[in-house]
Image 1 (tube, rainbow, N blue to C red):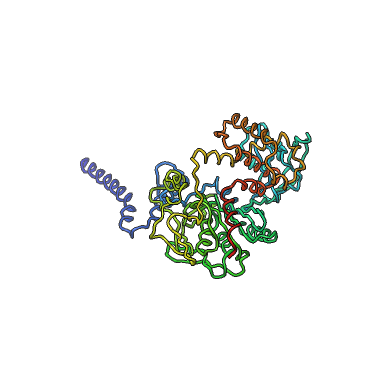
Image 2 (cartoon, one colour):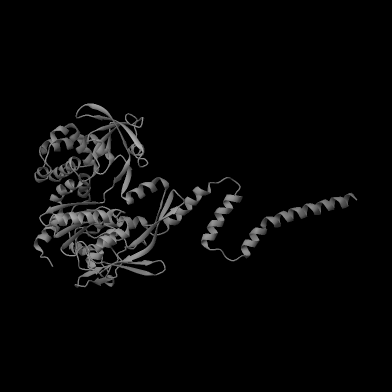
Length: 528
């Protein structure tokens, strides 16, 4: 009887164990025998398993983000993930304005020093001046705390129409005072313009944002009113932006019915945008400046006008980006920019460079043009005869690697020389000029803009000596060999801080090879 009881219990226990094993695997067996899952379904199911069944607690949101980033790394070079820390800044830049008080500033000795008061911002109306120190904002002390520039930005910006109370010190009059006003939208301009000489206008576009076409049309009207019949359009260092803005700007120059760009979706569907009637500058000579940092929407404009024989392209080969991205939200605080289409210029060429050697090699290619000899010799630009196209007037243009200029500007400078030139045009010199101007601001109180632009840098030896001292004190990696370029750089940033961006550009252009080449061409080429 005891043996019978023992065997009975063994049978019961085995039944329970087998039942547990079979029950535990029942769902797995069912999944194997179901209809095959798509990749999306597999990924979703995997994350669901982790969330419901994994033995330890796991942050599936963080894991999903890592999976997404890994997947995007395997795509083309222009698809990327945008974390929440970057999303607001990127959206703000492309929107064309931000909400704040409207100043640019440097942190000098732990204090907010106002460099410029921005046009269209509330600080200008409130009476803040360049050189003022902002000490306190809404009871938050901003000096003596080792705050970063981003900390200051976060304090000064906020919701539209919210009140900000500032405590300000003005060194020029040695006075402290308080200001109270509301934050407001401040334009982030993407277009600068001025008359460079009689009948010749100049327009620079630094990106293609939501407001760019409106800014551009305003510039065209102003220049035409000033007598413009010829135009230099500067797209150098413009990384692109919204395709719609590029299409609208190209339409400004092209007669009705001319092709602007063709976009091909992932389904192979093609849609071509054509110029409409009454473009604001369909007549008159146009020269477009490009370089290796002109990309995407910049190349759409340059390609459309080159392929329609509407403009002459001056400079160096453009970046070579023929892909179109869309920004898509991932929840409320993150996003991805995903390549969703290819574009083609009016002759049918794709200017997209290959990226089969990996992302690093792809982005390094522009710098490698110095080593390949292309920068110094246009004959070394790689061109594939199978990708040759012909414009209506018989010009041969190539696909597969950016826009090749009609008028190529050779650059025989070494990388070291290029680095020095870059530093002299960078924010380093802007900061230096501010520190010097701040000591002598009363000397420039009633200066005349036209006189300032029309004459060389005054007191140049004093400025150069101060720059030498600054370079040494700040350990700036710069050999001050080209003193003429240094003087132009100093005067240009002085013009920016005393007047505006157009003043800075007009001074820089006096020694700008690209601009001077376009001007010489415009002076000698008759109107069509």
